[in-house]
Image (cartoon, rainbow, N blue to C red):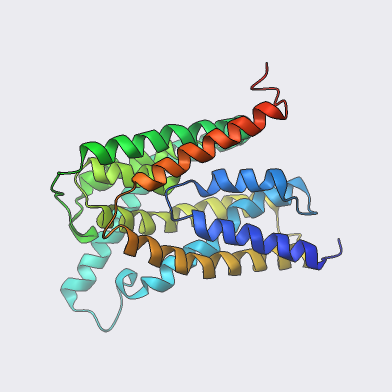
Length: 282
């Protein structure tokens, strides 16, 4: 295919949406599915299915760059204790990944065929928006047990990993589900959010590898360009998004994100109703 300026602009728009929504608890996959309803790239369905997942690598690289020293257990600037703490953090992340891998890998194809729909996204946006508001209301005066990601224990890490399984349903938000799990089981908002960032690294690398293997390595120059532009855009926007979120939650809770999810979900359901979506209209 010929790669036009219009296609590049649409790719940049998708990258911006990915970079903004990957880290905010509002569901990046859900937003990408919604964007795909209105912004159509001139590519095959097989490539688009792969692109919407692999573009997340750009967002993941932003976490790695921003936290490289903290995540690097072999840094010459660290003491032996600091290196051991970093390795321990990675073990916690790996343990937290086990539930999602155990459920997601065997059910991946089924979920893509049955759950990757706009009505499902809208319903999950609303449901978890309500849950965010409820959790924040009942945790207003709670004193967290873990004020730093380093203090999260292995048991809590595994529990957060179980919450990540919920995010296999599009529209749930991986970051949203794991942040909720972290807050409910004693982590501060900052600690839960940072652990969510680190948890995304192996999860997204694994999901991207599976998608690339399914798609194959026979790429056209246009497809490579689209993927590169999307990933670079997602990387740059993610840097800003991560910094904003960490600054925001130091003085605010997640209630505003809950209301955003509810409003967006209702708008999507209204749109589907008025255009005559067969699922909503029988």
